[in-house]
Image (cartoon, rainbow over all chains, first blue to last red):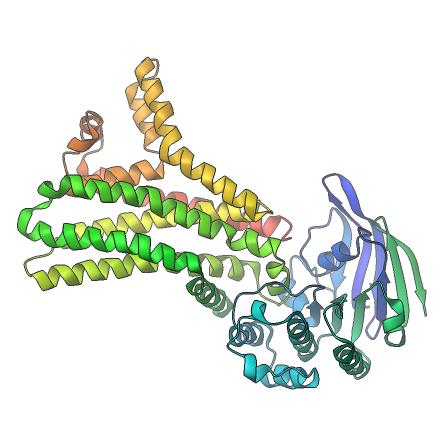
Amino acid sequence: MFVNVKNVTKKFLGVNVLDDVSFDINLGGRIAMMGPNGAGKTTLIRAILGFYHIDEGKIEVNGFDPIKDRVKVLPNISFIPQLPPPIKISLEEMISFITKSANISREMIFEESNKMDLNLKKNLHKQFFKLSGGMKQKLLIAIALSKKSSLLVFDEPTANLDPKAREHFYKLLEKLDEDCSTLFITHRLDEIKGLVNRQIYMDLGKVIEDEKI
Amino acid sequence: MKNLLLVAYLDIKESLRSKWFYVYAIVFGGLMALFFVTGVSDSVVMGFTGLSRLLLVFIQVTIIILPIFILITTVKSISGDRESNVLEYMLSFPISLTHYYWGKMLGRFLTVFLPVIFALILGVAFGIAKGGNLPWAMISLYSALLFAMCFVFLGIAFFVSTLVKSSDIAVGSSFMIWIILLAFIDIALIGLMLQGRVSDGLIISIALTNPIEVFRIGAISLFDPELTVIGPVAYYLLDTLGAKLLMFYSIFYPIILGIFFSFMGYIAFKKKDLL
């Protein structure tokens, strides 16, 4: 298995935000993670990405601990946040950071941007936060896809996209390698139904349902 | 190392686009330039003692402006990125926390110290143009004192920035630190001294743990070696430590304190939740 989450508990101010959560992601697994606000979905994703120190349990990504071995774990995970963050550096600088820190080819980012109908060349000197919401999200998607990771984590990735861009995005996902796993946090299962083969439902920090579709 | 320099470079680029940097560069760099242009060049003709009042004002202004600028602008460096989810995205790439933290710190230090260096160069160039021998020892020591003060407040700011989750709390905390170091400690110590219950030596020792006070004494001693402007405490300091040790302490104590706080911030960054 690629990701192994075993009996994970995470507390904030004494409250269990994740309560004894266990699940696996195998290579090629396509998962929709659902649940109401505050269910613990984002906390779980952040724990897998190594942003949170868990109180109990164990998380392994490709056999590595996301906290201790983040440099070995993160080349294999691409992450797209729900809202693009207000990064103040230019696209040129941002691409430079990503290509150097994650060993992604610059050409690949341009190629994926073209597929998302984003003219990257024209906007290279603009600061990222000054782009429109849709353009920002397209770039984040292009970067995530060009990273060629084993796991793509999407937190409501199409929230800022118009219908045409959503269609482009879903078409790109259909072309992903069979071994590539995806984890969508979503409230709209109908939109991604054709792209997932498993759904996990969380509430109050617990996995309530985990079933194949 | 490559990633550390990359983070530093991006932080500098980001800072150079910010309005705060230009306000800081104009206000502080301008003041520093004025210090060197009047102080350094005229000292060639008049000697520094004639300018002590003017230079004292410059030092006081530096003491007020430099710490608060460094604290307010730096304290949001990590806490602001955390609050706006920039940290979440940037750290979703395989960059080590060590490289990220020290890269940010290096970038911010160069940004803060850059206007000081430019002002220094400007002042020296002006002094050379006016002719005469420049007091190089004094210029070097004053630069070292500024370096030390920049470093200690940068360390404190990074420490606060990693501890707090909201940038509002970070800014509020940095303001409290600034006002305590600038005034409250002195007021409290003067009160204790007036009551006469604590020995003067202890009170002066406590005052010398305050980096602002240390900078003030170090800077004043450059042009007023007898420290006459600070009153009777001068006798105690010079008799106990001597001029050389006092200057050594004024430069190295803030640097050691800055290193301590930077490392505390680094440990907090590594050991606590990132978001």
